[in-house]
Amino acid sequence: TSARVAGIPPTVFSRMSALAASTGAVNLGQGFPDTEGPSTIVEQAVEALRSGHNQYAPGLGTADLRRAIADHQWAQYGITVDPETEVVVTTGATEAIAGALLGLVDPGDEVIALEPFYDSYAAMTAFAGGVLRGVTLRAPDFRLDADALRAAVTKRTKLLLINTPHNPTGTVLDREELEAIARVAVDNDLIVVTDEVYEHLVYSGHEHVPLATLPGMAERTLTLSSVGKSFSLTGWKVGWATGPAELVAAVLGAKQWLSFTSGSPLQPAVAWALAHEQAWPASLARDLEARRDLLCDGLDALGLPARRPEGTYFAVTDISALGWRDGLEFCLALPERAGVVAIPLQGFYADGSRDGEQLVRWAFCKETAVLEEGLRRLGAAE
Ligand code: PMP
Ligand code: GLN
Image 1: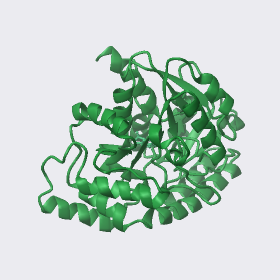
Image 2: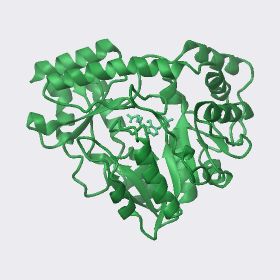
Image 3: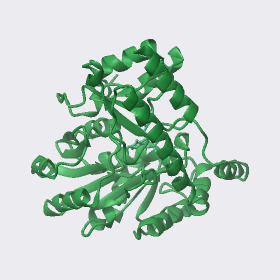
Image 4: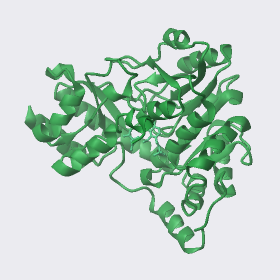
């Protein structure tokens, strides 16, 4: 194994899902829904498979999908992007993250990310030879500390890597926070990469505002999203990056050596979904909101108070309330003790940080009966 790969701990999601499978535990760990996305979209993919969409797609993605992504950005947010040069289709948002970091970061460059961060940000920054600096969204409210963000910028800072709605905290950055980010970016002439894969999974009283819509931001912002969360098709791994042509070209420059091009039969189906199932993500969000409340009420009743997340699939609790000090130990013991799997947050902070030690993430993108069974098991284990 190369030092590059060996230097990064394996992703906690695989470890915890394997543990769930081997112990038969209720999996409230890895964020994937246990119900399928719309069958209408699946039928479109079947049709594409049968009708000859089985050879390489263009590196940028099929023209139809790029147009559908551009139309989505316009219809939802009033953002204009040119489907010919300002959209690239990727193998999930994961490849868009990889492409952005490999395509934009030189060795020694610093990347500032909101902490706790999705684990691939750290891995891909390291692959690029960059240095990840965290700006912590602190428990229990997980809001942005704009002064800490400004203070994190150095001469070596290359880009800000933002994620809203935010995995794992469930924070949806509000306009004031986004304006603070925009000011730091403009004042320091920084590129912003914003991971908005949960853009449609936002709950009552909150609104997703894309960073690219703020003044001065369209020309410096690369926006990432994917089909997985919006349409409950996480296994499809069709994602995209949109933004200024130079930034999209940087992603494509890396992507051409990663996957060259993404799977062709799913692209027409995703284009169709964006054009014809526009109401589906909002109905998913309404449904998820009820499950969020079920999980959070249940955790509250068990003495594990969770701030009600504003978006995403996830709620975070502090396990010190139960007398535990180490989230990893807690999560490794939980399948045996209670028959439930959750995700410890300590791997989602920059090296040496102890901020996440007592924090644990629970996914509520599961059927009601599964959430109820998970809560019942947690209650019985106490
Ligand atoms: N970013 C965040 C914040 C995520 O939670 C996920 C979901 N695993 C991804 C990116 C990756 O998305 P995809 O499955 O489309 O690669
Ligand atoms: N985004 C999902 C999560 O955070 C899935 C993670 C993954 O599969 N790498 O749980």
